[in-house]
Image 1 (tube, rainbow, N blue to C red):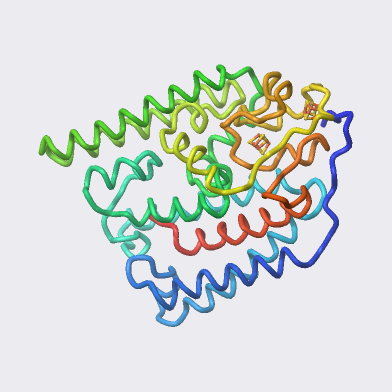
Image 2 (spheres, rainbow, N blue to C red; image 1 turned 90 degrees about the vertical axis):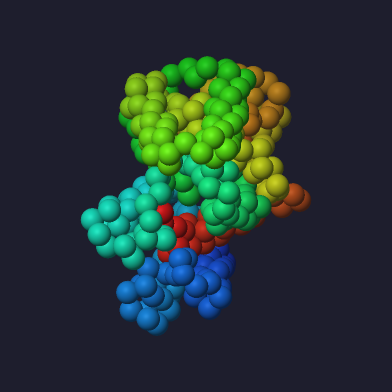
Length: 334
Ligand code: SF4
Ligand code: SF4
């Protein structure tokens, strides 16, 4: 790996993040177990009443382990890619079992399409179903746009495909943002239009499936060949909302004045948030999703959370993302 002229700051080991992630995960999932009923029940609870507590214990231990491992120098980017894929595999595994007839692996027993844009379009079309928008908003308050780099079941694949090619030059941030915004407007207009026109539900399902397949095509044809995450930064309408509403969270990536524009960090950022303009104005582009991969490359990059310094902010982010990742493993299904 090329080296930046500015030595990256390395986290020092501390047991605190692991313990905190364990407690946070156990508390969040215990609230689900005690308060929430169908359809959000933990998977184990759906099969064996009472077994949800064992699942909570396992997921809390896992979150503690993950938050702890994220502190080790050089581990962050590799671990993030792996656990993100694990989440996506569990999510689609449950969907596959649901399609094969194991209805308890589906959220409601009814089939929904795994297309991120439907987090916006679905409730507008149906006029109900606010579980996903509320889950999204709560997550954005806690970890901002890290939803897109840790918790989205589709983004995990865009990341893997983009990393198979050498990082190319993406279109300008403005072009990518306007494309996503246009697709968001189209999603809203189409969802409301279909609802009010009273057309057969099949038309809506076919349109949503076509949009989902187009997204797969973007990943296979653009991300895979050009090395930047075309689906997540130029196609997904939900991503446009996520990076904007993600400002509700105080987490920010900063570029220090010590940056010498050497471009070593550029291939780390498949979200296309680091380029000459970003280094010059010392501000990452809005497509940054707080993945954190660039932090291990260069000391001119830092994470901030209000007044907290870089290493404390990284610890806080690792606790939050590890806990949310474990909670999503327990409750996120379609
Ligand atoms: S942040 Fe600046 S100095 Fe550091 S690797 Fe990137 S371009 Fe080079
Ligand atoms: S700027 Fe850094 S933290 Fe933000 S998306 Fe790019 S690599 Fe990830």
